[in-house]
Image (cartoon, rainbow, N blue to C red; front, side, top):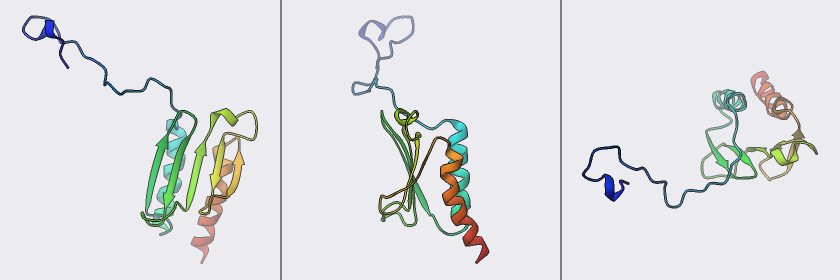
Length: 124
């Protein structure tokens, strides 16, 4: 959007923020975390276990959900909640029915549950 004073004169236009933009901080995955999660996702897709994924970012939690089929509930959901870092750990792995499969302070330990499942698929 250009300010009225800049419409016909020299100088650069004034850029205004989006009217509904939130200034609240939100939790996200850093590059290494996302790389680790997407690496596992790619291997699960290659094994035929997962076909789609979704990510959600909120002020309290970042979520990665993997689906066998798009119309279903997520087969696995990984959540990052930094507020729980000092307690039970900021990483949580949820199963298809919403049950907690693993909690931990390190992403690698939480993803190990899914990586073990991947090894069983390859062995068959």
